[in-house]
Image (cartoon, rainbow, N blue to C red; front, side, top):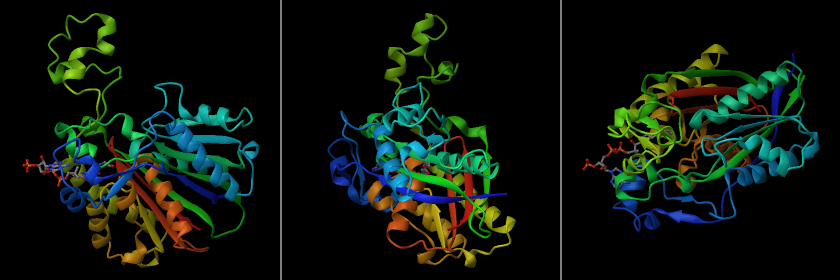
Length: 348
Ligand code: UT7
């Protein structure tokens, strides 16, 4: 059975750097607070009129396709992970197909937030292993800046997110001891609403938030109404400490699951590339697993939390910096809204 290798990796971040100091113009926060609690120094924000989740994904894809030594016409399946799609529907996958003038290949969108890319990679891996496809494009991209509430009331969430994209091309190999070894996917929806963006949505949770007019609302008003806007239901919400606590348990667990399943120890790991949620979470995981500094990659300082883009962005930068070499044992791991969490173990 063939295994999947990452034949090319690419990234794109907008030119516009938005520093913590810039954030203080919009809300009561400080560079010191943001750096101390998250490790973030700055993030990138897309050009509001020119860049979208898809256009950034396309730029990252071009780089990955080029590095794989193929052309967009060689791609035979697209998987696009994002929580900030250009449109509510259709998804970004078809927009990539159109923008890159690809053949009429399948395009699948994955909505798993922070673990979206790791989930997407595992789906691509199955199609490679089954021999169905030869060149799969997997993209993670986010344009968070358009939906954040730049106001003190939402400062706990708005300071952590940034825009950007990462992409890989998966190809089959018959070489033993190379490529994706295993993926481990999990979810627990018990606390689905503590890190969420409710609207637009078909949920019937309006009463939970005390929207007085829910019972009497006309059909169309349930989709979008003034009370929703007043109660900030058109912005993402997060119980940060609760997410932090769960992440601190599930990150180490899912990394160890991948290592144990394949008979490896933490000392065998060449590089852990965690989803860039918060520097303090990464440091906690590193300490808990007794990993050296050179075994963990972080770039949250520069880009903030880019959700589905964060793992491929970090993977791409790690590769560009020479931190990944042939034969290295790499673990990708993510945790986020849902909750969903996942890991992938691979030999480069
Ligand atoms: O991507 C995956 C999903 N997301 C995550 O993994 C995020 C996980 N959680 C976190 O990263 C952290 O919980 C945050 C960075 C979001 C928040 O840090 P925290 O240390 O958990 O702070 P907190 O929410 O407990 O708030 C502590 C204090 C509060 O003030 P009081 O009540 O103690 O006076 C907040 O109002 O910090 C205040 N605060 C801020 N102050 C300045 C919250 N956000 C800010 C801010 N600037 N941006």
